Length: 444
Ligand code: NDP
Image (tube, rainbow, N blue to C red):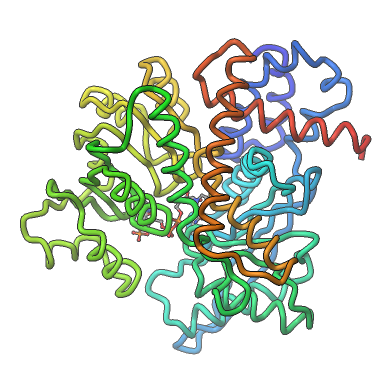
């Protein structure tokens, strides 16, 4: 970093302990040095300064009562990062690791990601340090209701439209949306990821995983590769991982490993996805339970073991910073040729540099996992039109969006003399969209 270094130093000073936020900002500012040289007007207009300061940060107490009648207190967040392109849009995460730094990092990334989709969506993110694991349905419902008694006043179909993320699926969205309607007396689709019976869209639950594979298939094909007959490892076994696995299999690939936060299951015959869905989506058990159905499979008691399993393609689809330099070295040593980030910021900065230096195809999260939010945008369109599109219609639009993202960021990497560097292409393409809209709307 050179011209933007003083700005980055100010960001560090102001947000000293926010490790994840600083990680995201430094990675993006690094890519934007070449933009500054071409567009000095962005400095004069304070565009970079504005980009690294969220428009609004909301933090609140969430009080609820557990099944034993004890009062519980959690912290809730909504970061409304940028509305220059459209209403704030981004998921809600329930996980004990949630803090201000992670929320700001994800909201910042979301603004650039949403700009890549070509839809008019700004960026935001929210969540709580509430841990849904092991909670009863009643506890989850009471928590969601309490969370919404504050959040409802900050969101709306024209202002801020949340969706799901880690720990927030259709059940939680149902409870939150139900409370939102009760408190506002409005039925306006202020959430996406809703159930099909009350305004949800077909393909939304599959969208991030499918979108990742559409993006990757285009990327692989343009580089003489394909999912067909490839060995694929996918970390996680949640919404993104399961649907990525489903699409990889339908494209002719063999998924040999999946994981959860306790460990990894490896099945050389190819993972039996029906069993995974039964364990994870129906019974909500640990992935180790796969051994009860397939004794010949292997279980590793350590989630990172997945990166030592030989593969052609790796899709990190679990969580941030799950893949570090050592993991990257292992993957490359074992012949991995392509990485597609399904999770947000799963690879550390050092791992990304290692992949790029070793000519491994690398698809960064903000481009490769934009299918979820893109489909959220399509759900908003259907809600406004009071129409439901068929599965094929939505799937077709999703595929088109993902292929366009691939083409636009590839082209952008060429324009900025870093052909094939999609990290740079995605950061610059997203930034230029946001920066143009910011300048057009004046200093505000
Ligand atoms: P889920 O909560 O459905 O699943 C997360 C999965 O990751 C779970 O299987 C969890 O296991 C596993 N996991 C958590 N930590 C680790 C770890 N350290 N090692 C291995 N596995 C781990 O979340 P989603 O699938 O929705 O989200 C996954 C990622 O994708 C997140 O980064 C999210 O921000 C991103 N994303 C999600 C989108 C969506 O549409 N859902 C859209 C765009 C991005 P366990 O069951 O043990 O907790």
